Image (cartoon, rainbow, N blue to C red):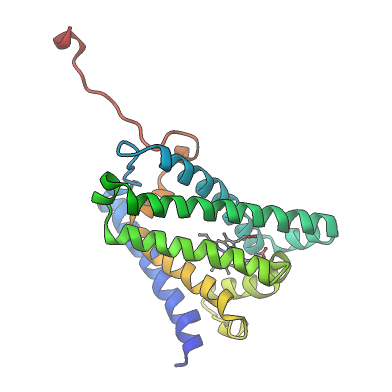
Length: 227
Ligand code: HEM
């Protein structure tokens, strides 16, 4: 087995297996652990400046990736008009930078705010590190190898489908620059880590995480007793 086989066939399948199996285990047997374990009560100002840019940036970026994967023809039709292509690329770049700024804030907060640092585990640091690498390699790919929204559909749409349909084609990724390969490998690593970490909150339902505060604190005070 060569490196490409390992990195772009074996490793993706290990990640997908861990993701599916451990997620099901956690949701079924440990449902109350499916949470982001908010640290908002410990510090809220830096959390705001990290969490808002990160989530608002990354959700749109993930949506763009999903459109490229599920409906590549729609994306190609959109990109057929140069103005629309530039609009998509520029907005993707701004959103990517926005998410990068957010994750830098979140990382800085974890390392420097004493109360938050005290509850930070090694896996939290690893998740933030991989997320930072993901944002950085994504934004660098977008700036160094222009028009990714076009070539994604020719390279990654068939590659990702080849993995999902159990007919892997690593030869599609093998000739790419190492930066882009790192982006892909790193995102499979994030997928594997998701069910073991606070990232599991992505799967919490309903998805009102997007619009409600990070934490809802419900008081249990007995009003009569404290009158
Ligand atoms: C294995 C799956 C993935 C593949 C094949 C992939 C591929 C790509 C490609 C080709 C680009 C360049 C797009 C462009 O130039 O317009 C890109 C950008 C980016 N990706 Fe991914 N990606 C994957 C998963 C992810 C995930 C899971 C995340 C987030 C956690 C992510 C975050 C980003 C970001 C932030 C950018 C920069 C967007 C921009 O600046 O336009 N990617 N990705």
